[in-house]
Length: 87
Image (spheres, rainbow, N blue to C red):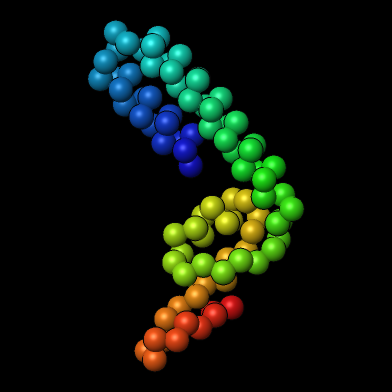
């Protein structure tokens, strides 16, 4: 997703400021290398947890979990204010 956003930004600023296309392209390439490096680091760090389950309170990490092969289990508050695991 980050690469797609970066590409869309590159395309937009390149159209708006064509005189800086060379600089934009260089910076974009550096950003892609950085994104790939971070992605590889996260993959290596999470490899021992591949296909493992973890509990989260908010679904904000759903995409992260999907992309890195971990399986979220959501914890929801009940009306009695006792957390319940939703599997």
